[in-house]
Structure formats: structure tokens, C-alpha cells
Image 1 (tube, helix red, strand yellow):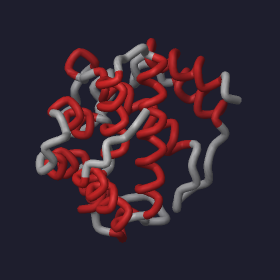
Image 2: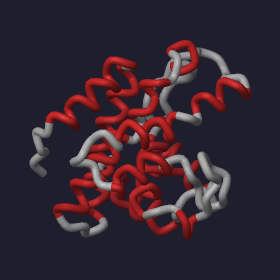
Image 3: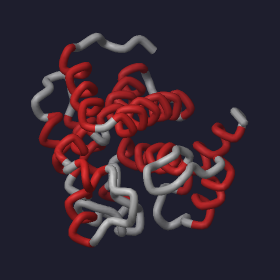
Image 4: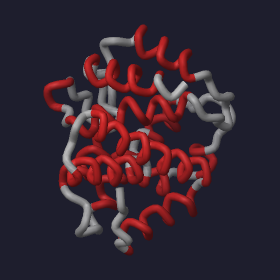
Length: 188
């Protein structure tokens, strides 16, 4: 898939990289996983490209989160966690400045932490209010975060993460999660 060399996308990724190297790497990984997921789902070129953009930009709002919260080694306090949860709203606002980014992509950035059972944020939406792209991002974002080393814990093996998805069927879209696990398992 050829990427547009649009200056706005490059600028936004630079904002993420300037804020935090892990978030930058994670954003690129999530973009690639989302793009591959789009191919598995049989999306057309435009749909795949939108998933790629949504994945790359899903955490851009973390550029507005203070470093002492973003990279805290221990558990976040309730107040710190509430500040961290603002990143999806910040990301939606930041992406409004880019004419290339569609409203579908912006909504995926905004809603990528919503969960089917209503336990997510920022609005506590249930599955019927969560768009397809945000449901895909919820899966690939969680997968990449859990299989990566973080400042507060080490990575988990992929099949351990698959087991966690299977144990938490109410949070993620079951059909999309099954598609992801089936296709990812073939890589291992």
C-alpha cells in the first residue's frame, strides 16, 4: 500500500515522536496492524488507507499528556488515569486541523478505547455506537500494547494475549477478534 506523502500526516507523526518514542513506535505498529486487518476484512483501497491513518494517529493526543504521567513506572492514581484518558479527545481535536483526515478516521481516534460492553471511554458507548474502525483499533491497539515492553511491565507472548482476548469476550467485537487471532496465529 502506497502512503500519501502528505505533509500533515508526517507532521502529526512527528508530534507523536517528539512527545514519546514508545508512543511513536506503537502508533506505527498499530497503523500497520490496522492496515493488514483491513486487507483481511476485504476492504477496498480507501478503507485500508483510512484504517492505516487511524492506526498511526490513534494516540496523537498523548502529545498533550504530561511526561510524568505518560511514562510513569508505577500505577497511575485515579486523577492521573483521568488525565491519561483525555488523550482520545485531544487526538480528535488535533486531527481536525488536517484536511486529509476524514471524519471516520477522526471518530476512530476518538473512540478507540470504547468497549462493546460500555466499559470504555470517553463516552462509555456500547457496540452499536462504536464504528467499525474504532472496534478494529481497540483490538490491534490492545494487542500491540500487551506484546510490547512498557515502562511499567514487560511484554507478554502473543498467545497469552490471545488467551486474554478469549477470556474477555464482552469487551471486544467477537467476530473481529476471531478474525484477528486466526490470521495473526498464522504468522507464528
